Image 1 (cartoon, rainbow, N blue to C red):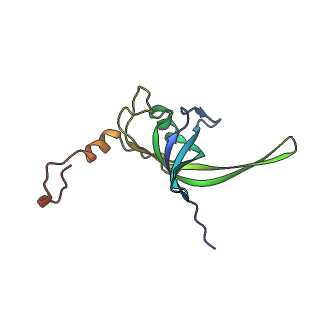
Image 2: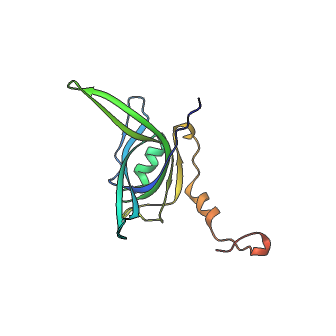
Amino acid sequence: MASYNLVVLAGNLTRDVDLRHIASGTAVADVTVAVNEKRKTPNGEWVEDVSFVDVTLWGRTAEVASEYLGKGSNLLIEGRLKLDRWEKDGQKHSKLRVVCERMVMLGSRGDRGGQAGQGGTGAAQGPQSSDYREPVAELEERAAPTEAGPSEGGIPF
C-alpha cells in the first residue's frame, strides 16, 4: 500500500530562531509556528483557535530562517510529519513534529514581527535540495511590475 506524508502550514514564529550545528556541521533549528483558525460557534460568535506546531529546519533552510526571521515572522512551511519516541526515567514519551522540506518567507521587506532588521520574501529549500537557493533579488525582479499591457500577454500590477 502506498503512503503519503505532506504537511503545509502558514503561520507565525512564536520566538526568534535559535540556530545550532550538529557534530557533522549541519545547521539545525527547532521553531514553533502558531497557526490561527477562525470559526463560528453555534450561537454565531467568531472564535479564534491557535495551534502551536513544532517544526525542525535543516541545512541552508535553518541558516536562512536564522538570518531573516524573528519572533512574529509570517512563513509557509511544507514538510512531513515525524514521530519522535524516547524513554526518560522509565516513562515513555512521544512528540509529533514537522520536518521542513521547503520554507517560504511571507510578509514584506523589513517585516520581522515588529523587529528592526532585514526581512524579505523568498524561499529556502530543505535537505533534499539545499544546494539550490534562488537569490532574493531574482525573486523580486520576477515579481516586479511589467510594462507589458494585457494585449501583450502581461498583467500590469
